[in-house]
Length: 385
Ligand SMILES: NC(=O)c1ccc[n+]([C@@H]2O[C@H](COP(=O)([O-])OP(=O)(O)OC[C@H]3O[C@@H](n4cnc5c(N)ncnc54)[C@H](O)[C@@H]3O)[C@@H](O)[C@H]2O)c1
Image (spheres, rainbow, N blue to C red):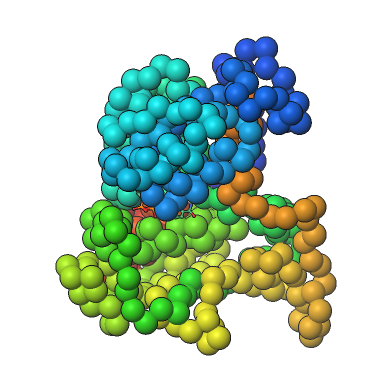
């Protein structure tokens, strides 16, 4: 696919293909096993920088170290304690510490950056990272408004480097095998998807520095910050973006918790996709796990129903699955996503969770959010994307 191709959604759903014309590894072996066997400080490994080492960034940093596919050459956080903790964690690779991410981007020896800062900073950091010539692994949501999403997508498309977003469900062996089976036509014609993300807390505890999450202008609200993972799965199953959405929602338990809170604590949305497919989705922060809690996606087809979350396919009248996805080994989503990022760099591949997938997930979430904020049916065109 040409890099400047118009963002037709079906193209976004294509599997990995060779896309990057310039090989990153000059003379490096393409064999993952060979790379893994190298000394951990091999100079031919990419030098990675992690920007934002809070909860997610610290986890990504550890994951990068565990892959042995890159060196953590730089760590950046504007919080002194987290920066120190990140530098300590990556001591094996002797990283340089930065409190200003732009100085990290100035460092020409850094090949790839992980961006795990609050959502409202992703657009600026991602665009600057692309412009600095880095491969980018940006946490989801890739951005929080249509204009920002378009800006990041434009920058990523104009770059010859890898741009991956933290939609690690796309790296799941179970989801990949389940979606392949669905797209083969095995369960029949897609009719309906029901899904949810429900937590069971009855109080709000704000981790230090996590206030941004409760400000809708900084996180995008819980639908953008949390739910884009499964919203992306709806698009993935459909092979299309929705046409319209309606819904309701609000904040009926955690009002003003913490003080000044502007994000919701529950909502229910229906999206309409092409061919009359409907997706109903609920997110709520206060439902007991024993009473319908948890996160799952169920897809109903003309011949069978599929529990997408665990890859089980059921025919009517039979309590046992007619087909069940089997995978080799564990399904370690984050490790697989990070390894896949380095593999894409090494082998000039397009990541499965690329900028278009991520942009569409945010736009779909924004469609739902607009519908329940405004209490009306909203069309895709109204997003102005
Ligand atoms: N893929 C996933 O499953 C997943 C899981 C959790 C979080 N996330 C995403 O990761 C991102 C971070 O979430 P989190 O929970 O780690 O948040 P967090 O608040 O714990 O961490 C953010 C970090 O960024 C730092 N930071 C803020 N401004 C900065 C700046 N200008 N320069 C450098 N550092 C700065 C903060 O000091 C903090 O350490 C969010 O976008 C979130 O949606 C993704």
